Amino acid sequence: MSRTRIRDFHDDDLDGIIRLWEAAMSSPTAQSSPAATPLYPLPEVVASCQRNQAVVAVRDNEIVGAAVGRAGHGQGWIIFFHIFDSVRADEDHGARAEAGLLDALERHLMPLGLGRLSMIAPKESTAFTDLLSNGFEERAGLRYLERQMPVQRREFDRLKTVGGRILPRHLWDGVSGMQEEKNLLEDRLVVPLAEPDLAVHFGVVPPRAVMLFGPPGTGKTTFAKAVASRLDWPFVEVFPSRLSGEPGGVAAGLRSTFEQIGELEHAVVFIDEVEEIASKRGGEPPSPTQGVTNELLKQVAEFRDREGRLLICATNFIRALDAAFLRHGRFDYVIPIGLPDDTARAAIWTRYIPEHTRDGVDIDVLVNVSAGLTPADIEYAARRASQEALASSLRSRQVEISSRTHVLTTDDYLEALRATRATVSEETAREFREDVQTIARL
Image (cartoon, rainbow, N blue to C red; front, top):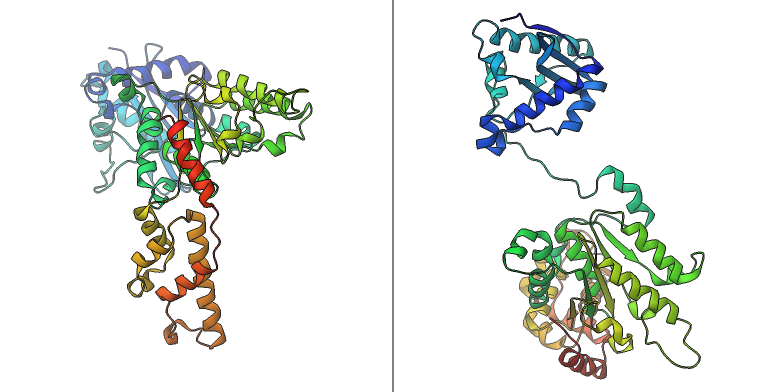
């Protein structure tokens, strides 16, 4: 068999690098264990060959092995190392090819002042065995972790253009109480979109558009953001009031915005107070918003044709919406978000009462007195009580925590509740209960 020689990578070696990478992906070990496949994708390996350091093993003018590395933060990393099995099986030259590639790569990296050379290699792979036999040591207690970025670099500028953003993780867990609503949204929205294979198994069609309705302050926006966070999708909020400044008016602004959103791979699109651009049509002469309503209906229909996106609209006045929005085929679900029940109110109070104070506060009393309040109302009362307690401590010059004697009590929160006006009137609450019976679609 011909001698194997080691040399630097040339641009015309790309075909050989691709064949090596494909061989590593299709090796018997990789086929039996997906964890044994190369960790870095082919485009990244090719880019490192061209921009960083790479050496190849050549036999009979064929690329039979390669070692690709790069430097970062004072350390060298091998991002790809593979030799054809036929070369590795050669007792005379296989081991020499492995050592030769690694030695040549080290020589390229040494002038960069690197302290060590490392590689994250699947334990089942041949690369792992080759490295162990060439002076590399396994670091016990280490595990490889990775996370797919929610937005790829090519999409980032598009996301900024439409005012979208990546929300913090764990917003879903931060929604206090409202367990019934959370369970409903989890079953209807999150699971079918996050686990499409599971949805197909049960014959569930992932939703494309949903309507949330309920009195103001009940948490519709919070739930929309929590769904985006739970899915780990970008969140794009469309503000009807801002679209009026677009050339051509609101209708043209809607069309342009949805066209740009269509270029994103995934997105949760949220329109709050959608009644502003989806009001009932009709009358003589036609209302000024009729053209906007027609455009939004068109955009909803086109939006539904694309996977990987969810439109969430929210309204405080569902009776003001044009009837076309509530027909089957436009919105998959029409979900009520109402006032918090006893369990939800207890969870909300617990969230806003300082932990060191809770033992001295009768939360059951606060739950009973706060019936009919929204989560926002309860938050306001809790924060007001805390602010008044701080002010009281300042007036009595008991600011130092170690010498403070004033602790928040049940009476402090009851006093704050007396100064809190309910956002939702009894009439609004009654109408909401009627709408749940006649309009909600779960």
